[in-house]
Picture (cartoon, rainbow over the protein chains, first blue to last red):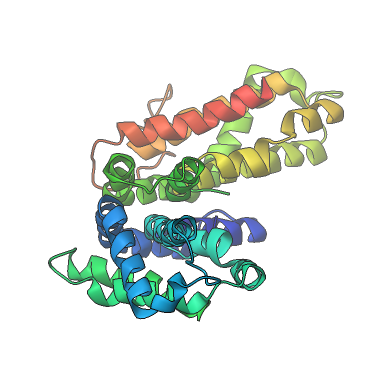
Length: 164
Length: 186
């Protein structure tokens, strides 16, 4: 799993040397930003269900045709799966906030997503709309501190860009 | 390879649950104690060659047969291999201490180490003894409790001159990585 510490250790191991001052400084920088990340992760985990519901609702409001027969949300089972997927992305963002890197999203969310959505004929625009709504809806200090919000939105944008 | 943070992620993913306040408490502790941890890694890496040579020397002093003809540290070529291996083990322990997780030590150092040593005829007991001496001196360096030892006029020992604090948790963690090596060889 890619994170600052594992990247540093991998590089040091490839060179066969002990962790150098540079390596320790890199980890120190990561630790300094960690408080904001962990705050964002905690707040997101606490409100995950609500955030998922709001994001899904926003997506079906913008694209009501999705509920028509033959579309991705034609019955309740399929609608539920849409909400489940959004919860999945938000959970991965929660993991990314904890790790401090895009490793979890890359490995478990984005790798192969394009192929899967094409095969299942799912519109990625709907996911983009839902996550964009979440990004624009999140605000400080109501939801979390400004630093935490910046970290959270960075990963939302990363996911949006990957799905666009 | 995992660190303390990605370890939490992997175990949360197994339950498909987000990481909430409960799991975050121990990670916040990692963050709060971060500078201590970096100092501890620095204490090991800055004194690495001293720690390794001291451990190998101690191992041989206790069992001088090792450097006599037919011993496993005779001739210099094998002694050099021994010092090299001591440094490698200490290096992976320093990685594990930095990451706050033993996976790098397990995957890249200990996996198959015992089998390799058995095949090469390296005495496991002596190796374990050297690692436990490395544990003792690393503990002293992290804690800044190193002393002159049995020789009162000894001046060749070093303090890291860091601010003193309660490092008991980190010392215990570092000790657990050394113990992991010893039990992997046992």
